[in-house]
Length: 151
Image (cartoon, rainbow, N blue to C red):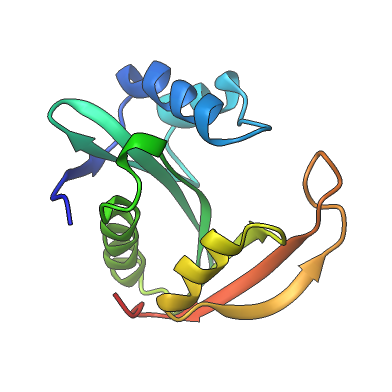
């Protein structure tokens, strides 16, 4: 496992986050939406994993009542399989418990078996399916886990 620095994102991280989105997703989040979130903190928090000054991955967490909502998680390909996503999830688990959340939910592409297995290892289980959730028409699976996560 590669130990990384986990911290909250700041507006100056925008270009790095946009670059990660472009590499990691066929349909990346739009820059202006990320910029808005970074400049107007509120519903969502952004956290980054830094390796020797490089943002290797990041994630976004929101909350609705007593449920934390993992909205995004991305790690650059050259840093994958080094425990970075797990360390980000540990940070989100801690934040969720500080918020007094009892569970965490997320959406994942039905075809993304690697991500589904990763989340399953932490205690996430299938809750429901949303037909055509993604812009390209793919379905999303809604996964839910009790907190604390199995890390």
